[in-house]
Length: 246
Image (cartoon, rainbow, N blue to C red):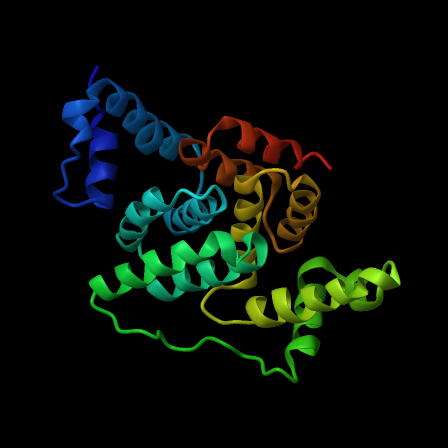
């Protein structure tokens, strides 16, 4: 059968003038993977390319696919994703995966940015101070999840309210309030972080609802998650899809 013209064209747009060694060592696999990932998935789903690559990059951090992340960052540049957007994605990942899993992605991304001809640090995107992060983080939670989150820091058992407070200040006040990505984009990548790392179905359901509130439809999320199958496999995507029926 060979690689379809559409898959060849899409691959060429991602990686101009690049010929993979796998075409020689694993030609049968490449034929089926490229036809699936770069033709069937792309043409069957309705996802704008910019969103597709943000979702893919977030999922690769979530599943710890650092080598593929390194490859797909360069592809994302070809579709208009900026270094600031990818840097913001990596920053936000630290709240959902922890620095133990995100540190290697910082190092890889910084190297790519410099190879791309940009200097570090990038332009700052913070909009809060240590004094305002709680108030603005609380407002971000309300904007995303609704008024029920207005006093989240004091909800639940007293013993765990310190973690609620950190979620307001740190996760939302330090990251969601930053420029560089919109709230809508931040919720899409959060969903991808959670689905890709697995075992987070409770949090996935909450962020499905947040995505709905911010304008995504069930069909939108199905199509976004479907685009992750080539990168994180069927089981975790299917687990994520099961959380859409709430």
